Image (tube, rainbow, N blue to C red; front, side):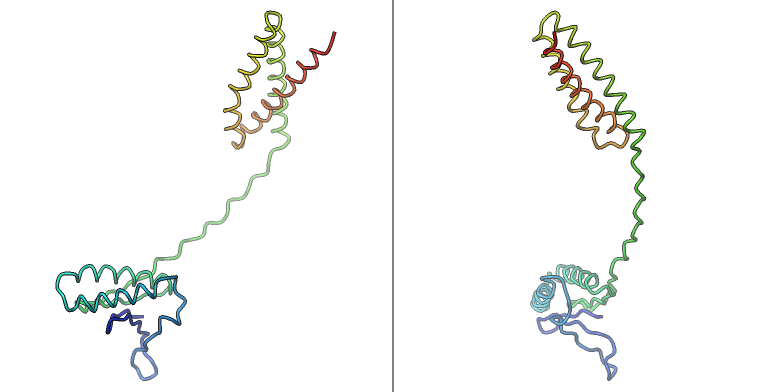
Amino acid sequence: MELHAREARAVLLRPLGQDGEPLEVDLGTLTLPAGLAEALHEWAEVAGAVELSEGAGEAVYQRGRHLAWRLAVALDTPVRYVDPVTGETEEILPPPPVPVRPAEPVEPTPWATGLTVSVFVAAIVVVSIVALSQGLSQASPLLALGANVVIAGGLAPSVWLARRTPVWRWVSYGVVTGIGVAWLALLLSLLGP
């Protein structure tokens, strides 16, 4: 395909028609991205005006070259760009296709190991919070309550960030479960004798 600017309109020529002459392709019949055909015709109008004036030839060349590249991408075929001011031609190639990488296989979730880690972490958290809370509650129940709030508030950002990390998510599940079970155990201990 060749891109020309003739008589203030963009002309696309397909090589070798039936009589050996290039065939003109109507831009309206091609499936082009929105606005490309209009941009090509605007460029051709400007190119026609520039032929009459001096100094703007480089801008017309760059704009036409860019539009030829967009056309090559849209049609997925090389486009020969003919500069309307100088008459020089340049072959514009579409970019090579991007190789498709195969999807990486998804590893199975290690439920047995992960849940074992979660249970051990939960047990450590429960024992730690209950022991700390019972020790502090002998001095002041408000001190024990404050310590629990500080512990939960301090662990919350780390647990929140770790919930999506493949290995650390099990630890974060254990911490959350351990805090919940410890608080439940502390509440039940308040009801006892």
